[in-house]
Image 1: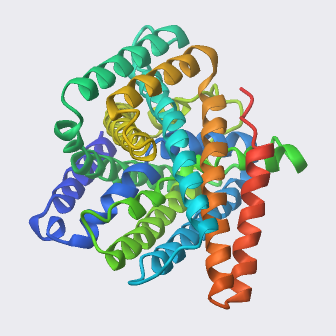
Image 2: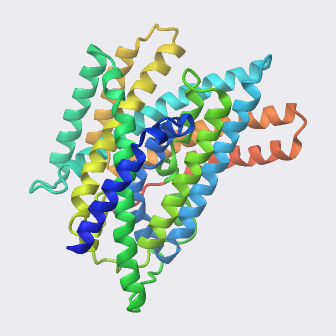
Image 3: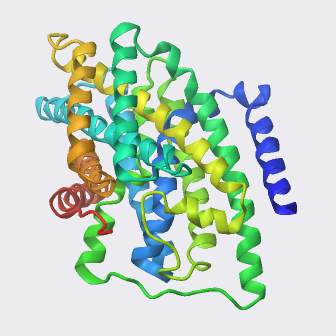
Length: 399
């Protein structure tokens, strides 16, 4: 009871601090909320139980590597922003072609990521109900798809986009409460000699290809690049870096507290396993997590739907309108919903985003070579090769 009260108190205080006029007045913080909305979103909900189940005591190592390579890809995008947005800078035809290809790949990745967000929305939406089954979850997902496409067709998403700052604030506040609950639970286990060091369930090539299929869980930092209408280049670059640093700190603390306190097989592994895990930690946490999940998935889905529609309209010279793009996105999303599992969709989304990151890394490689920075060009070439490997070999977790 005391822990429940403490968690609620931490959530409320954190929300008040995050909603304070001084913080809201910070341009950098407002610019950070867009990448944070994606980075600490769906990944936070599924990644802890998934890494714990697959990698056991090595889960924090895999989490650190995912965050590290995400930061490297962010560095490639930031380098491109510095070079391409420099006054008077001229793009070569090759770089221009790669930029166009990257935009198309990002639009496609958004389509898959919306399916990922909304399928998680459906799964968490029914997770605390008597109908916690795949079929009702898919029905909920399909219904939300229809709501989004109708809203986008009729009025656009301006009214819904106001949810972003609210959802990020709520999500970070609830995560603060979750980390408190986990810290108390971890302390109890540690002082009682009850920490658990599970052996990894995967090794070798299967472990590597699964990690390849998880890059989407730390994705979202690239959104800073596309906020030029609201923020200058320096602010967007800084906001991306800070968002990645903050999300890495949260993810690492989360996985360190989670990976050593649950017996393997004690709970059924699923996309909503975090709800069952947190019910053991504190009874209040499942309700808070589901509320955060629903708000986060819906706002992220709206943002990516809007982004994808805008990209398609821009790239086709408005021959395909944003409204028609929303319909196409919904059709593809519904097909994925009814033909694939959530972990399959996570793998597809990871590979789609890896294609985008690979193209951005190849652009950075060419830009660095042209600037005479050979070592940096070589590093970006390595990132390009890694992205190709992720696209070719990324795999979904097997339930």
